[in-house]
Length: 336
Image 1 (cartoon, rainbow, N blue to C red):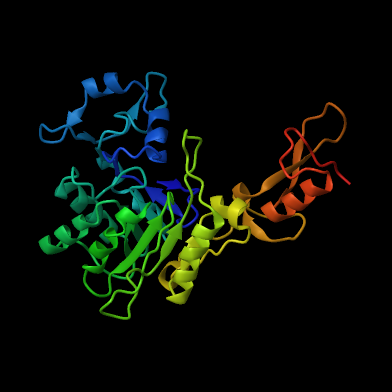
Image 2 (cartoon, one colour):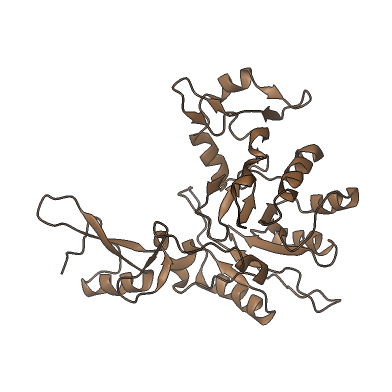
């Protein structure tokens, strides 16, 4: 269980890891490669799930040097059975993104794995559980089998990156009334028109919208433009659907709308001194990772120390004062 840098959740919980969608922009696959060790060696002694190409870990795996291997089988689908009881650490409720390093509802995931995860969630109803999949039809299949839990603390979402994937919203709409639904438009790869209001009713298709850009430095990385995002924001506001713009959009949008549905506001994360900060110029509060750090030296040759932060707007104004609109590598603001 890890405190997460993902803006819209407090913690990520990964009793299941791995995915087979093969998305070229997947951050989870890159991260799993970094912390996998020698995958071929690890798999040679792996416990398999019922003679399939799925894997099971009943206890953590350590490297010869004693360090824990988070993803010993790389991005191959794996059930980490020992993680199922880690939710007990929370005495008060938090917002938990379930299986951020997997697609729990992928077609390859056994029903039994999903049932184990849901049973673990049911033991700790004080938390909000957020699920996200690119295969939302699985929600309906599990609903028909009678083990898709419902309630204000279960949120079922789907990911859309382009218009061709918009039909995934219909799978959410087919869930029973009262189900909490949300859509994550991340990464946004092209202009998307959600058409939130169905033809036969007045209830929006979703209860929450999250928008974010592609991260990392992949060759061919798609950078959204401001108009594409504004279109989604205006549709959300027109239909009174809360919308959350991730911090990585700050260089594009400036001020960010970061709204939570009422049920999630109860457990939304509090400001954290290591994660959140205040612009030294305009005093606006926002995540530090969305701002530029201001550095200073006590004297020539001394190590530079952070003395504050600048939001994207104030940073741009400052750079204009020194005659450039681009960051200057190695440029530091001296103490007054």
